[in-house]
Image 1 (tube, rainbow, N blue to C red):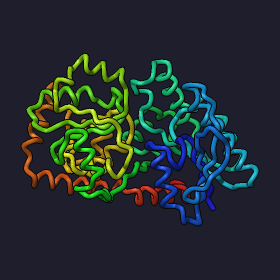
Image 2 (cartoon, one colour):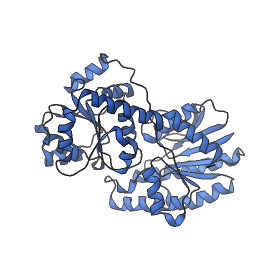
Image 3 (spheres, rainbow, N blue to C red):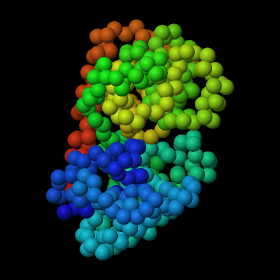
Image 4 (cartoon, rainbow, N blue to C red):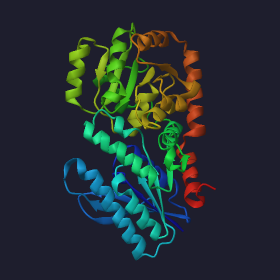
Length: 387
């Protein structure tokens, strides 16, 4: 039995986010395995263990100490992993850390886990140090922390080939050992029919109708390029709507309104968040097109979900997006007028061309990004290393 300890997500079940969905799917696909036992750290307001998908989910009580919470949580979770390994005489454990938050402590934990006969794997996530939401000192910390974790780790599992290339280019002196395993997505259609009341009521409430809206889904932060998408959509001649499903960020919203005056354009519709995954899938399926403006990070979950559900996808041309979309999408850049011109062209594309792009997109997802495929790759790495 190979014991795998996973640290760095908010935990399962019930938390939403990229890492949480990944662990949920990984444990779901491996829940009947007699070869792997998962131990998942879960951020909580209490201590205790629960079983979920045959994984042991151990709760870590985290005090409310502001932005230092995440670092405290990872360190506390790693200490608990080490204690459990010792107390249960576990041989050759794998400790898999998600994200590079605890670089200053990486060397001591690697040494401690090596003494216990284990190895440390890390998922470096995306370029966290580039995210505009962080103040400069925190961005500097992220970069230094990343460097130290790359140095003191046995294997980096990158969910993007571009991230893997970046690790080798930037940290060549450490001779990092890496492998590529993408993030996954669900490939089945929504369980909701086109005439489902939940979907129709959502459309009516937002002033939308099927196939008459472009869509963007993601966190409302500057690096996802909402400013460019909204400005260019306003410049376009499109008769369709632009529905934006995103988190609340009033400060950023007001800053954009001051710059763009988008509230004067009735086509721009901020629709709030949608946490019902079947409804969100149906909204994607019936969008005319999907905008993806993310430029920081690895394989982005919302991009995979869009390619698996929406036929016409318009992606910001950066390495992360190109490697996923390949020839199954259309691409835009941030130059003035570029996206507006593409939107005008996209409005005129024939139904047959859109359908052809949709078939390519779904084929791409099914072959390279299905959760079954991703879970199989992880099983191989956990049981065989890089052999």
